Image 1 (tube, rainbow, N blue to C red):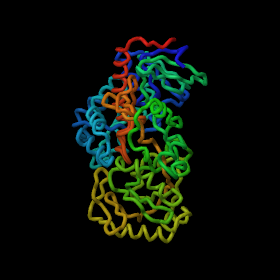
Image 2: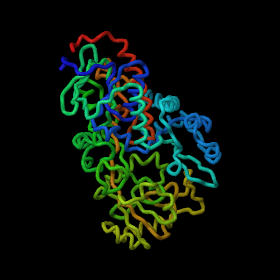
Image 3: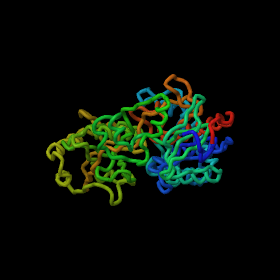
Image 4: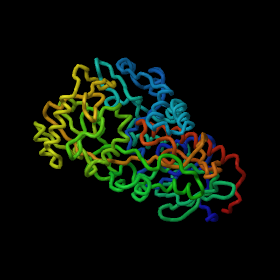
Length: 501
């Protein structure tokens, strides 16, 4: 295994999505010869990053700080836009609140405290961002007001982010090997010495002094999902990259890495019931403006508990627990203008009707009488004296229901009515390996593994049960940068390997 090296590098990065490419760019700018391993063909590169909208959460204080990230935005656009502010403290509090205060405080502090400077670093490497008008801000009285702590997305969404990162890597002399899977870490008593790979089916080895694992979690591995998450998780819709099957985590565990984080839960969203796995457009996230009912015709969740950014990653699991693992999102004509773009197009499972009775008939597999009674009770419970406002938690709520709706409650009484068939989709897993503040992987002896670093969904300990939308991309960027910097520093201070090439 340790002879006949086909490649040599200072740093090897396993993976080629956002976290991986940030690590590679950071390692290269710190002087390290860097090779990136991408398991997929080039046309499918980027892991889960390509499946995102490119929305990214970071702390900022005012419009002036936003201008530093998006200097090309016209002054006229700034005049009609209220970006508000989102402090490091708010970001940290959101992360703690949404993980039931289980998040690793050291990692959480790094994520929130370094988020803004990392955004500036990304822009210095030709990554461009634009405001998320439409999904994160509605125009009220002539002003776009952002909500939910997330205001920018990468130009071109996830695809655009991946392309920009890869282009920057190539411009900086980083080698990217496609169709190349890491198989095993070469590890000696002195630490990491290289990687065994399969390049287009051929076994080869790379000699390296540092490795950054940024190859994603195990959401696309049915066996691992069922083993760690439990029953029913083998039948969920699989979002994201089909190449995120957990080998990176397993390789680290095989040499004594310490597991960390929430291995029994995952980022699980509500989305189209019948869309094939790994296709884009699965998510259906405008549920705060309607209601969700199961096949018994009953509501089972507070659709308006919080902004969509703070609830969507756990509502999929709640649908998985319903009869037949499915539900329907119900909207009327009053709120249809607020539905996101993923509700449009041909690959959407929906029915439309001029009466609720007809809607139930078209749905078919739903208890019609129970459904009609549920909608009537819901309509009768709404306090309409409170004005509806989609930009804030408006407090327009229900009264007296077993399952309340805390905000954005509107009567479902205006034809045409629409129902969207939804199920649970898994996006990424929360369990991974433990890292320290330098993104160095920790061993089961609670010591650093020399030369081994990790970033992105491979890392456990940040997210438990839930997470704030956009925090995943930011975590990948923050810890990718930290991992790349420290991997380079380690590699460039090590003596020449005694392994023979």
